[in-house]
Image (cartoon, rainbow, N blue to C red; front, side, top):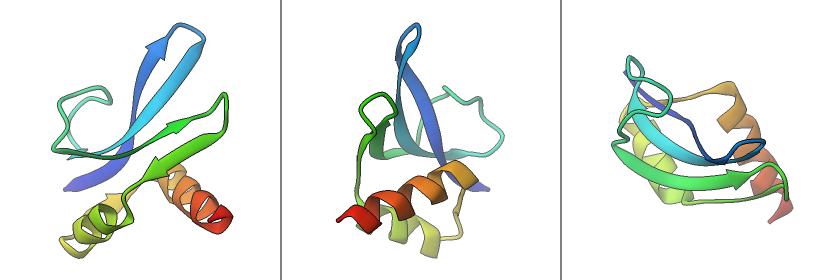
Length: 78
């Protein structure tokens, strides 16, 4: 199953995350199928491509709870 989840990158104690689509059996920081956005928890800024997310959801992908929360939160701001 394909999941839309966060991939951590950045420095120690200063994380940033990319929203990616990946096979659910792969590691958190494994090779992604496609990158659909990013989120920086320090500045609380994020950006994502809603068209790519909707495309993957129609194909049967599932969002993790944190990604679901972030997408709704960022969309509400716009």
